[in-house]
Image (cartoon, rainbow over all chains, first blue to last red):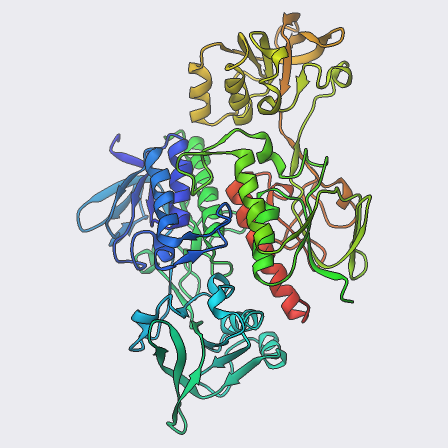
Length: 316
Length: 316
């Protein structure tokens, strides 16, 4: 079965490309479905990020799309075969595994799933225009940018992540509004306590974001009280969504075990999924760290595990 | 207690500097003991590596020391305070934690241990005397010395590193013996292929080093065939160990839980050690992947965990 690929990598963010670099250097001739629309686009969430200042090795920062191009060039250099197609269907119930796009069906001895997650957005009218110009879905990535220093900021959401991000932003902003549509937080008790006692953090209850305000970048937020229907404008330099992420796993439902929120489950201390020979890396299994460098690290780990697993089976 | 640091990072490889970048960007003003002699030198094992081709983001490769300089520059840029001193003693039994070098004692609310691992030696009779007089654990550091030029050389080991170092040494020596105690290599496929096709590289199977031979410097190696028990002397000017690593954890014994081989134990799925507020990252807790990018990933994770832990405790 010489037309069976050793490793098929699904997804092309930092996890996917790092897996490809390691798999290619292990002479496994990896095949990658880069994706097209699933998860935003090929290249993952970094392609929708401007300045990346926390990926180690780039002391002066690097643009997200540029970093993704570097990753891609590196996996290409070592011989990764790539197609810019979304995977529509997989069959992990028999071996070799089957992976299908609109254009092809590929057979695979092993699989690395790195389709990432998508930050939820609200779709307010100015969102597209203001994205990266004061609107963001990642406080840890963007909070330290000069544009937010000593400015009033706003976080949308009421869960643990929202509290975490709002607390984080109080280090930089002059004040942080946490806008939540209910009159109580969904956050855990410990996180709620934290929210209540954090100076500079003000929770705005029963309220939803109507729109971002500004010319070239965010200068305010239009918010609506859902009980009184009162709409008002608040001066802020940043609006941060913290309304959750959706892992891009719809195509894997029923094929590998997912947790209650749809993330792929891996065995602790490994990148192994519930199906032997199928590995996961990056945000598709990680709702805790979600950084480019953590995704890259697990991509490397997944490739090393796949390589060792194939070697054990005398494949590849 | 304004003189208590929020985060003290011990070690300055990819894990330590990535932790520093994240901690600094979270406004935690991290303090780093870069180390001096422990673990080789500040900067970790990368500083003794030439071409790094698998760190994602550098499609044309990068020199190890150059990559470490980039990491260091990045943590410096965000305000990490660094001292080039080894830690001699720690006390994690009471809070704040205490971290001591020859020159200072630093108090810390949280700790990130990233002291890495050190190349192993065999302890043959003449080793101490011949160390740096023809014996080395780092071909990349020492291989280019005039004493080794156009001389026969020897590498001990059969893993990836052994192949890497032996290949490297063929640039300088007239011939390189790779002495391995088994009849097959532990090295990965790509490395094995490289070993088999490298001119001037000869693998000596089923054989162990008995001793180094020489007066003031190495002139030969006594080796023993483990199947026939035959001992013979081979003329070589250099003997290079490539037989694995020991985690740099002696200073942490009795302070955090270590596994049987001395690696720091972390709770699965976290970077938490047995002491709350003390985290580990990189090769000091990882004997499985040991790559720059996996170390960096866990450094990031450790910093995010430290940040969240401090926030819970309302510190920092």
